[in-house]
Length: 496
View 1 (cartoon, one colour):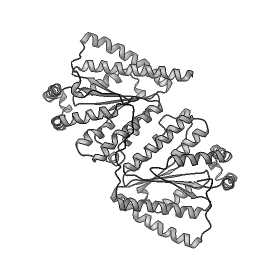
View 2 (cartoon, one colour; view 1 turned 30 degrees about the vertical axis):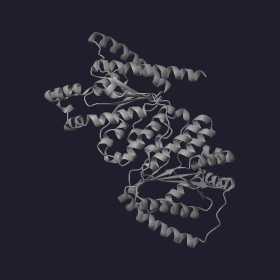
View 3 (cartoon, rainbow, N blue to C red; view 1 turned 180 degrees about the vertical axis):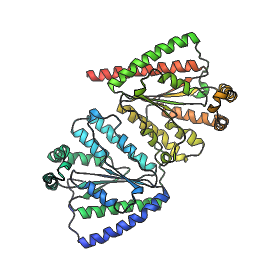
View 4 (cartoon, rainbow, N blue to C red; view 1 turned 90 degrees about the vertical axis):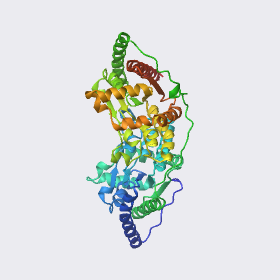
């Protein structure tokens, strides 16, 4: 690949200019077609320092309406200062349907640089390569057009360019310590880039362009982009087939098999609540110091008691260290991206707690049953969710998922109480009654969800909630136990 890469011969400048003019006109015409077709495009420009990545992007966007694209320059921060998962900033940058995102360097540069700086271990590096492959496959399966370009120059060419930038007062700021270190370690970087490209080219192939011929590189990149968009417009939005990886799963009961009789008396409830909330408050301080992120996921039947359960969990927490996200139907800008995008953008920083009232599991429940996505989309989602949650736990997050469970008679009684109590009427809607009529279909979907996504690293807990007080105590016990284990595990890891 890079070792054997041959420089392009010089081409006639006038001929190149004519080709570029035609390609710019073609790209100008494609932008509205992309919009109409609702096709999102991601263009990743990787390459050597001083290879001309910024200049290349400038030429690519020169004829595109600024409303149709976004340029993102991800920041590589030291691993010790990283507060979000590895792929967070790249997921956050995903474009809406019909728009283009240009990334000035991305997941390859970040992973390679941190590995060569020994900020991550070889095992962590391999995990990141796996995460990149999962990320790219999910994007392509979800209908994204992905173009990955590596802009290549040799070591001598890089030296001359860095020297030229450093000697000019107006550009010396562009030469960083990282650029100089990369030049010094050119061979190590070249080998690492080659390995990364070899291991991450299945879903979206890497395209290596000769950065020593600037105008030729622009022509070649524009040709690749125009061709990729043309093929996407011709073929239509691709919907990937379900992909299944074998995850270690925890065996789950069917909902119909769950005993909903457990209860607790008021005196015991008050004593347990006080004890558990006090301990949870202590643990919140500890996980903040140890920078352990926590993600609590609530799903369940309407009127099962999710809100009251969440309040008892949130009450002892420092309000500066947690967020509660009530998840409703996606807004237009959320619906126009990959279904996990709106959850990626709500993830907690390290040391913080995030509580989701409804989650990404809507994909395999309400979106499945109400026809808001096609069958391939929700069938793929089981594996995509397992990959997402594995990435979260690899990052160090505690992920707990609660299905708050009641029977149909209890739900009817609570619906009726809400309807007949003025101050509770806002809690009951026509949609709640309509969903109740579909209880059997939802139960089938929930059972399948529990069986396919209760992994060892991110398990489901079915919380018996005919007695709301019992449900609150059981949930708090699970959370406290999990956080105590995470703190102990963190201490053991530090002692190694």
